[in-house]
Length: 409
Image (cartoon, rainbow, N blue to C red; front, side):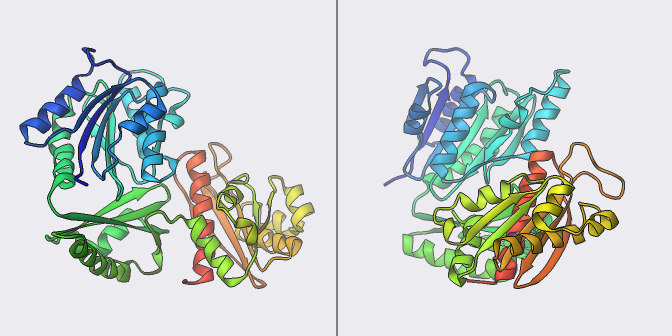
């Protein structure tokens, strides 16, 4: 099946004068010799949008208002089509704050909802408008243009849309692999892969920031699927050797799924004790089908009294070190293991904000405890972002600590 390009305008009719962005995309693609297989106008409807997306591994360019129901529909539909989850994008939230600040308008109350993007999406700043974003996956590619960003539309089409369309429509086979890392920064991953990033050839590499993770996307081309597959396998082996244990999985893998697989394979069970994350860690673990085989229980202990009564955290530890401390996190992990009679335990205690920080323990300070076969350790982290971002990063690092302790597959 030959890949195709679709241009979809959401929330306007085919004779609407306000769809200048969609018209500009079609005109630019035609001038560049890139055929558009479908030009679609739809109402703000989930099912209609999903039917309009290119389903042949091609490119869909979507023009829609970032706010309101149209933006929500677009984000949901693309996440489902790509097989990824929606997560809060701190970069999108910062871009929205700047956009509204320049217009002397208050940030909408639903700003965090507007900043939800499919994981792996890459922001493209637009002069005079809200950011556009791109999601390039093995299944298909998507470009989402906010309506009203006239000033930056031509540059975005030239620099992003046309190269992506040509790549999707080029002859031969294209194969994509996404390698996912945890507890590594974008700059660190780029430094380690600098030789790969500078190479020319049939395999290209892109480092993509995701929420609390960094993804490395490999795209291999070949005259045949077999040739592309061979090139991808060779490049993947090289990159994996560089990433080492920081790489936890590929493509549709998630930290919670990888941890669950390793617990099940080893016949181990897990219990968790959460304070500042309020149950998010347990929610992620139990979102995996079959998690009852290894997840025993989770306890939310917000107050000091709860930590002492339910987990047996010594009052002396809380007085000497505070609830947000390494000793408290270790005692919580040991306590939940003892209560649940499990060999593995995780605990999270911290300051998610926006208030409660001190010079010694600013907002974003989080201690994660890990108990394993009777031994307990704790790590201190300093996360950035708002309350939701800190909670998500905390749960991710807790999962990653357990993953590394369980060892490789």
